[in-house]
Image 1 (cartoon, one colour):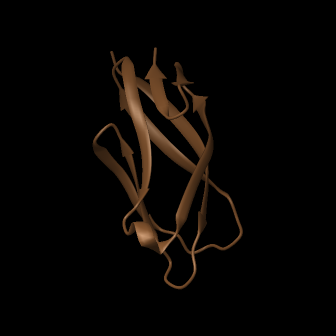
Image 2: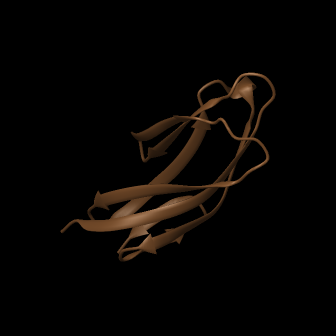
Image 3: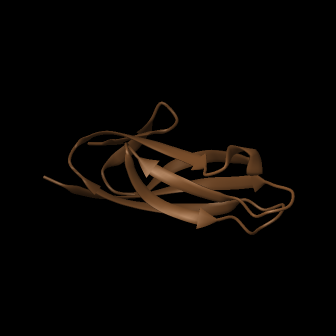
Length: 93
């Protein structure tokens, strides 16, 4: 049976000249691609997952690694029968 889960993450990006683009994957599935346009600000990112019980790796990456430095912290489950397991893994119960 599938479970609906909402996950929140605090995301920050340091960059100089061209706003970087980042992607978010859950396991190997691309969930979102966004352009980072803010300076000196953490943003709360929202992921909505509907999946069977199991473990799902949440991975953030810059499209061009040299365009900046991406920091992700405080990954947490806001809604659903799930928990964050070992920092970047969503465990749906």
